[in-house]
Image (cartoon, rainbow, N blue to C red; front, top):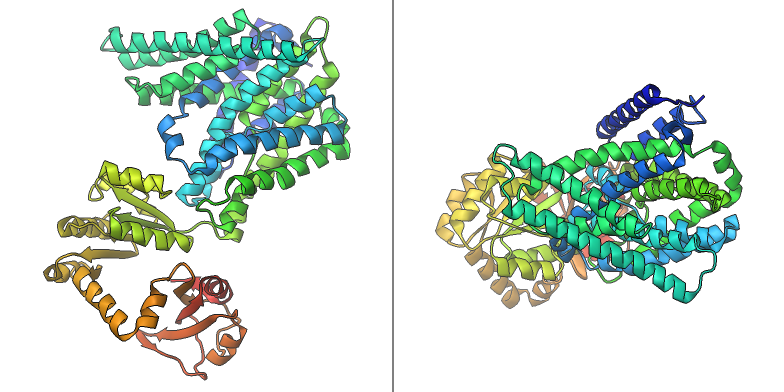
Length: 627
């Protein structure tokens, strides 16, 4: 029994909003994408649950279409508002390939899978393919909060989601309009594309310019300026969508995206207040859209997909996602395990569901109905992919990351000069999660251009250290050319953030005692240089090999944790290690020795492995954990 009538409609809207808020709270508590809880809530009150929500609950399809359309406009506007040009510029090169070549592979591959396995018409297949390109920050970000991977990996996944959210929505709009035209030729298609995209761009630019001018030059009342700025920006999103959609149907999404992109990069006053307010509004409309999806979804639609639907999900998750990720990340600073992790993290969510809901409503309620069978296939397929990817990839992301060992503790290096850069390069080659802090703009730009994760700021500032992840750092290295700065960084890392290992560079040998009084590992620049020169003179072969550490060769100290090797002799363990690696030292109770063959290893011993880089890494997995 569906709810009808003004009073009942008000109660229904209140129930939807309440369920949406509860879903968001559960998402925050259990650290999984809110999409999962929203879908469950929608099914619970939809036709397959209590039956209190249907298309007729909102006065028919036209009313629901308008409400969902405005919700989509706000969602797209908010996504574009967070699409910062600077962030894209700083993101790894792989992001550009993921959002171009990768997106094209996802669109074409998904469309072919839908066409082959579900025998869909090409127009519906391409529409589903365009929608399922989008991953989206609202489903990726909760995963990254639970799985603190390297900044490079996180930036790639987040930026990919933000960019693809917007581009997928615009592409889907063009394809949807094309499929509603009876006689479609190349000329007509180009005309439709130009009309929708051109109108959206023009209206979006005009609305953004007006909003920007009002915020910059008009007194919005000193007492309520932040509030008025928030309301004006929200009104801009809705006006841009409505005006463009009035000129050409389906042009509103492009207008909302354009306005959001321009305003998000325009340096608006009260930008933080605007972003926070829009985020709250977006959460509400997200809740509404996902729960309203239940008004169109029936389990029969999912069951009707049969094995063909399962095949589409497998193609999207197991074939297309790994293919586009591995092609897009080739030659970048990602380890194989990180690339594999990104292949397993591509949940679909906000944009596919919201735009699919909007299109399905319009297909079902058009006079005469345009393609009701296609609407069922659209909703069923999109919903199935969202449900499976969110449950498997969102719910098991932590376990996948731990299995692949892609959650390294962070290493902070303060100072991006020659010493800091060289150290970062060596550590990253071993798969460490390295973040550099540098306050010189020229040096910072050089670091980022070379693919390093670098933050701007004074490393002796508590807020800068905290923002760079000092609370989650295993090691902090103060590597600047100023001993006073290095001493202050060491003090903060030790006293404020309780970092396990703090290492400082002492440029003046007379300052070494001051560092060591803080229980800080200290490297004297003068003594290190003298030691390196002595090695070149007396031990040239070892010196040359040491210069290759982290590249062709490696030395690692690990703690013995594997019960299978506890109690075994060094000679027996050495025989089981990969070819090309040796046990060089055994440390026990503060003493270090080159072990004889008969030394028995005890739990908690520290052993130093030396050999080829790949062999050392394999030996670490076999014997214990890095120190």
